[in-house]
Amino acid sequence: DIVMTQTPLSSPVTLGQPASISCRSSQSLVHSDGNTYLSWLQQRPGQPPRLLIYKISNRFSGVSDRFSGSGAGTDFTLKISRVEAEDVGVYYCMQATQLLSFGQGTKLEIK
Amino acid sequence: EVQLVESGGGLVQPGGSLRLSCVASGFSLSNYWMNWVRQAPGKGLEWVALINQDGSKTFYVDSVKGRFTISRDNGKNSLYLQMNSLRAEDSAVFYCVIGNFWGQGTLVTVSS
View 1 (cartoon, rainbow over the protein chains, first blue to last red):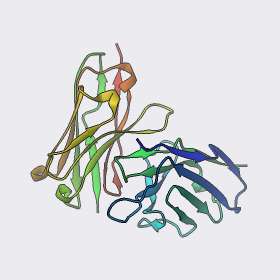
View 2 (cartoon, rainbow over the protein chains, first blue to last red):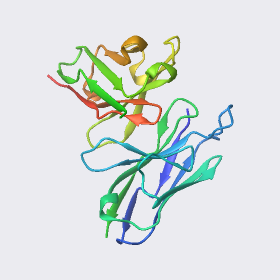
View 3 (tube, one colour):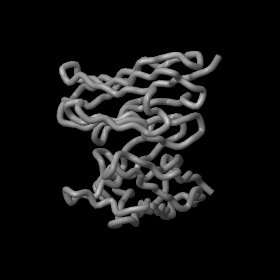
View 4 (cartoon, each protein chain N blue to C red):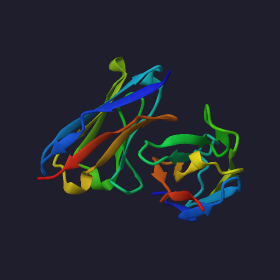
């Protein structure tokens, strides 16, 4: 099983400042088809998860360009360039290279 | 517009059964692997089950093996989860996840 580990688990951020979340997998997420199935999800309070980024760095339809993803192999990062109030929630990394598994979640809150 | 709508959740006693459904609109499910993911109250996301395009391959998290069965009907653009021998620890919101799309979830509560 692939274990996903996120850091930090909590991130207080000032409005307008950047934020960054890291995700590490217990083994390489490069699939035999050459793709890396690493996604980032946002879950606002009381809402279902929403896809932000897929295959490391591709923004899903309608997602603000303030969100960006990067990384390779086992180490990945989600960056928010300027945090807004609507970004408050929990962020999860998710791998779909081998079944599915999720990071523990990172709670983003405003200082 | 792509939409996934889950149904079938509710309150059930320990040892009971429920059948969850997920109906897709706006796209055809037939080309996709499909998943059920759950989230216990106040907890993170947990993958539950996966089925391939024609239903010939299924996979489960260890905690539900032998109790849950995932299935699909491509003709009805639908995904199902039959849940038997339910336990209190199965209480969660269950989401169907297909490709990059998530449903709104259906709440399952197992309690006497």
